[in-house]
Image 1: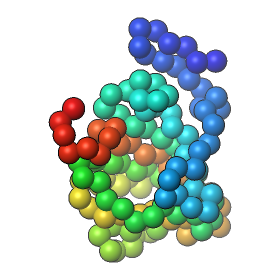
Image 2: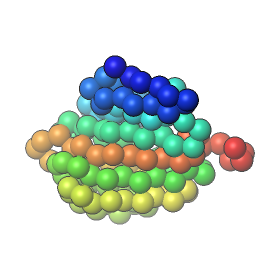
Image 3: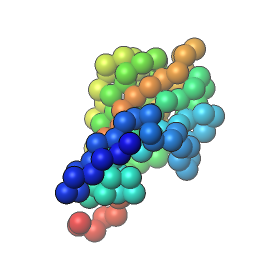
Length: 127
């Protein structure tokens, strides 16, 4: 059960449903743990993602958002600016704004990773 105290919250990960966000394909699922819609955050989007084998997100870039990926389980390919890199457990990837990227599960088991994005929207206007 979620608990909220003066805007703060405590949730168990099992309470959050898996979702397939736009431009995610083949079983690329995420749990939106902290974001404006789920926790009222203003600056952070924090998700855990689980990509089934061959699942992927379409190549894209952000105008102002920074992202950090932290691989927890499995193996995948992180494409950054047209170059593919194998990523495995405990690899941490930082992506500044304007860098085209994509991630896919190239392994035989689920690829599980955390994603932190800030700010929560990709508007070029200051918050």
